[in-house]
Length: 50
Image (cartoon, rainbow, N blue to C red; front, side, top):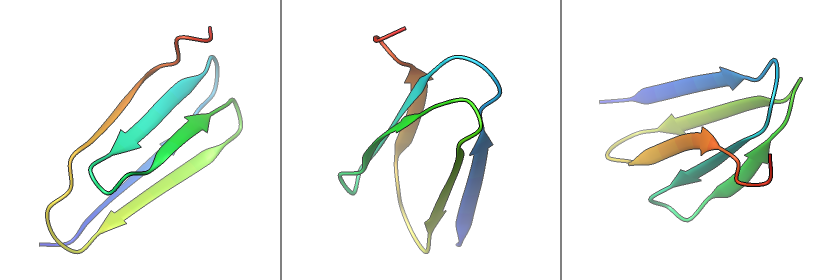
């Protein structure tokens, strides 16, 4: 199964983390694209820096 998620942030800050070790801050106007060909676990939560 292929999976793709797209996050476009309008306001605030978010933190993206996933099971392959990616950690990324997402800010307003940023586009985050995650593509996986098989299993992946991810979360996108409000940044603690806000």
